[in-house]
Every structure is written in C-alpha cells, then in structure tokens.
Amino acid sequence: HAYLFTGPRGTGKTSAAKIFAKAINCHHSVDGEPCNECENCRAITEGRLNDVIEIDAASNNGVEEIRDIRDKAKYAPTQADYKVYIIDEVHMLSTGAFNALLKTLEEPPQNVIFILATTEPHKIPLTIISRTQRFDFKRIKIEDMVEHMQEILAEMEILYDIEALYTVAQAAEGGMRDALSILDQAISFSEGHVKVADAIAVTGSLTNEMMDQYLTACFKGRVEAALEVLESLLREGKESQRLIENLLLYCRDLLMYQQAPALLKEKKGHVTAAFTELSKEYAAEKIYAAIAILSDTQNEIRFTNHPNIYLEVATVKLAGSQIDVPASASSKRTDASSSQEITQLIGQVEALQIQVHSLQQQMDKAPDVKTVSAADQVKPNKPVYSKSEYRVPTELVYQVLEIATKEYMHKVKEVWPDVLQLLSVSQRAMIRACTPVAAGAEGLVLTFEYEILCQRATADTELQAAMSSGLERLIGYHPKIICIPEEAWGDLRQTFIQENRESLKEAETKQTAAEKQGEESRRSEDLVVDEALGMFGAESVEIRED
Image 1 (cartoon, rainbow, N blue to C red):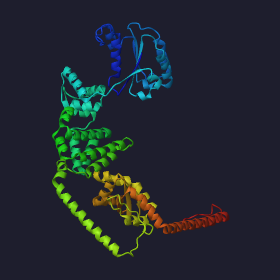
Image 2 (cartoon, rainbow, N blue to C red; image 1 turned 120 degrees about the horizontal axis):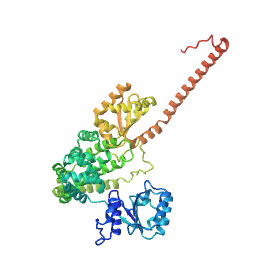
Image 3 (cartoon, helix red, strand yellow; image 1 turned 135 degrees about the vertical axis):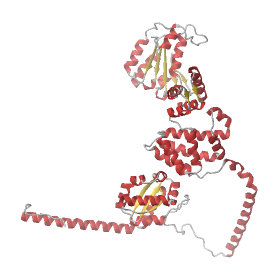
Image 4 (cartoon, rainbow, N blue to C red; image 1 turned 180 degrees about the vertical axis):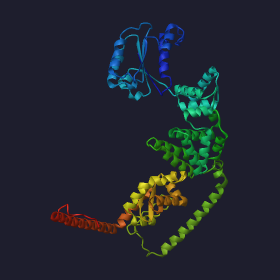
C-alpha cells in the first residue's frame, strides 16, 4: 500500500510513479505493462484523472494538508480501480505532518496506494520508512544518456556532434532530466546543428583544447604560461568548482588511457591528439601528484569566498611539482642500470666495513677516551629544521626582530593589498599565500604557507625588488625582504624572546619610564593652567601650545 522511491534528481522517480499508477489501473495491460491507449492511461498521461493525485511536499508540508489527504483517502476511487497519491520531495514534510501521515500508513484504506518520492531519504523518520517498500533509483550511465539523446535528435532531424552529447551527459551528472534540459538549451543556441561549442557555452565546461593547454603548461613547469591560461578561463566566467571538476576528470582520463585506451575511447567518443601526447609523455606518478593537488584545492574552495586564490596557488604547485619523469623512461629505469647500481652498492658496503674495522682498532688502543653522555651534550640555542630542505635565514630574521616596531608593521599591513596590485599576475599568485609578520627600518619578514612558494620567492630577485619599490612608492619604506616558512616563525620568535629577555625587559622599562615622565609633565602643565584660570579668569587667559 506504500512505496518509497529514492535516488538523485532527474533519475525518473516521479515518472516511474505515474507509470506505476497506469499499470495498476490499466484494464488492457500486457505482462504488467500499460497499453497507453485506454481512457485511464490517457487521463493519467494528461493529468486529468481525479484518482491519481500528485502533491508537492515542498509547498504543502503542513499538518492540515496531510489531514486533508487522510480524510479524502477514506473515499473509494471514482473512475480507476486504485486511488494513487504521489507525494514528491516527501522529506520536506514537517514533524507534525509525518505523524499525521503515519496514522494513515498504519491503517491504510482499501484500494489506496501511496508513492513517496525523495532525494534525501535520511531525513524521513524510520517509522515511515519501515511501513513502505523502498526502491533506490541509480544515476544513469553517460553512454545510456548519449544514446537516448541521439534518438531524440534523430527524431527531431537535428544534426549533432557526438562530443557535444558527451559534454552534455557529463554535465548532467547522471540525471536524464538535467541532460534533456541542457540539450534543449544547446539546441536553441545552435542553428540546426548541435556543436561542441554550444554544449560548452551552455554547461560552462572547459574545452579539451583549454585543458590540454593548461595541463601542458603545468606539467612542463611553465608557471607564467599556466597562470595566464587560468586567468583567461576565469575571465570567460568559468566557475571555480566546475573548472576543478573538469581538470580532475581530465587527469582521470589520462590514467585510464594509459591502462585501457579502447575503453576510454568508447566512453568519451573522441580523444584529441594533444591528450594522447600528454598520456604518453608523462608517467602515472606525475598524474597522481596532479590529482592530489586538485583534490585538496577542491576541498579548500568549498569553504572560502576567494576561490581564485586557491586556484592560482594550485597552478603554481602543479607547475612546481618535482615529479618530472617521462612515462617511457620510468619503464626502463630498473632494467638499464640495475647491474651497475648493484656493483656500486657492493663496493660502498665493502669500503664502509673497512672503515668500521679500523675505527674499532683505534678504540681498542685508546681505552681512556671518555664517552659523552646525552646529558653532557650541548643543546643548540637556535631551532634546527631538519625536515625541510629550505635553509631558514635565522640570523637575518633576528636582525629584523631586534629593530622591529609596531609602527612599521601597522604601515605595511595598511598598504599590503595595494602592494599586491602593483605586482604581475605570477608574482601576485605567489605572494597571496604569504603574511607580513615583522617589520623594522631595514627589513621585512614574510611567512609563507607553502614551502615551495617560500623557496621561489627567496630566489626571485625581481619579485623582491618589485615589493620593495612598491612599499617605497606607497609609504617611503624600502626594506630587505626575508622569506621563511610559516611553521618556522613560531619557534624563531620564541627563541628570540628567550635569548633577549633581559634587553627586551630593559627596553620595555625605558619605554614605561618615558611614558610616566611624559604623563607627569602633562599633569604639571595642567596644574599651572588651572591655577592661571583661577587667578585671572577664563576670559583673560589664552593657552598656547609650545
């Protein structure tokens, strides 16, 4: 008496409910299939059969609407054999409405069937689910959607490119309704021939040429070229989330083409020459690294109001990836030089054994040598960063901290957005992931979230010169730029405070004394002014600041 149809949008839940209503009310059905020709079938198709009631729970989610259904369900059907209630988006019902519906499901009237359709079954109370027969609708395969669209276009006598249909099907994400809606828009864009450009314009997807150009620049380490391609894509209005999704699918296809090229051609319908070249030129490790970077960026974009920043940083990371092994070389890596490497390793092991033996003889001849305990070892005063390949300029940071002031830091932070605007596109993408943390008369310390960007900024003299000239132009400040990883800043600052605690206290004491002296002088001046006002009156006294 009650059915629950669940599944993603556009997969045919409501359509299946109407077909089900036809099947149980058709008097000329064959093996359960409705004839679509009798009066009941035609009335259900045209939506004029009073015994098949379709309700949208999103706009009728109150207790009163469900009570009205409960009261009317008691009456027998007038034309059909069964009265069918189709409640769409049933998860939108309120708690009171669910309770009212529960009573009807527990004691259903005769010849009444309820079909509940929803995209979010987890929001439906278990008491409702337990009283229904559940059917899960799956996403429709891309190949099936393309085949169905081909039938429709052939019937409409409209020409099409097969790549355009695959683009539409991919954008629909398994929903046939969305695919048909997008196809309808693409037909209106076209002039009797649905082309790839029409599908791209409607879906906002990237063309194969765009992705070929972008990933080729990234894989070959051309940071500036990759950033220019990204900027042109964003200028065209491409959405950040869709852009990342297309790039992830493209990288997935590269891996599939390396393993099963025939299967990918069957799914995609067409493979470009640039795509084939990329899949042959680069190893799977390179593509794995790109997928990891794009996946992390996709997660970060969901929780930010500035997705372009993460896209630019991802582009720099993709172009700066250290895995640059061609696919052809990776397969021959071990076979060509294995014997030579083994010979070298054997020689190194023998040399190490000789050195250990000689050291052992020296230790036996010198018994008075004192061993140094772990407690006697001198602990380093400054932090050591063994995990990082980048060498932190500790002394330069300490020099800036010795002369750093809040006044300089406040000025830098105030004009920092303007400084970014004075840089080029590639320079701005690198600097957006950094933060000024300390500023003095002769130096400025910047912390970078990613170490690779810190290394690039340190090596880029043009970038440092551009930042210094920008600060000089805006606030007359020409510092030396010092770049460090963000994780190193906390330890450096703490160590500097511990080593210079006395001098910092002395400076703080001097500053406090100066402030107290200034306050006392102000108070004495105020007393003189008050005494003058009392003796001569406010009209006769004129106060002038020295």
